[in-house]
Length: 103
Image 1 (cartoon, rainbow, N blue to C red):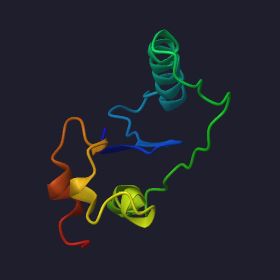
Image 2: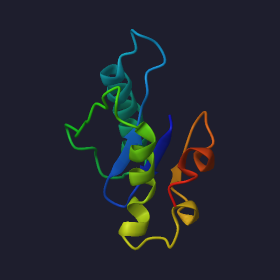
Image 3: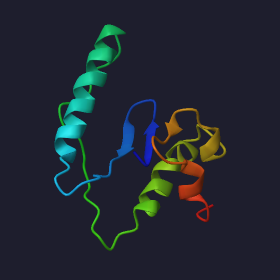
Image 4: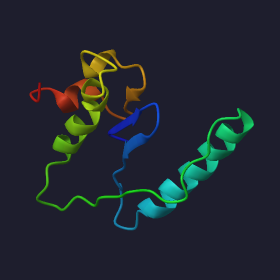
């Protein structure tokens, strides 16, 4: 997962398939199911029934999307710099390497 960013009232997640038969809809559905169960156990609000998705085309630079997501807490006034926000991160790659050159 190149980036995730949990904001106070929503989340941003950028998923990338690693194979031709990757099923991103199934992945996000399972993610919402498992995290929704955890949220229920901790008496947190439920996820909305649907979500907004955007499919990047081959000619779109996914690093631009990573940078946009990383800047969400800065735009919201929650941090001075994206790297200071504790609820932004990456799984399987170094987020600093991805956004270098965008600052």
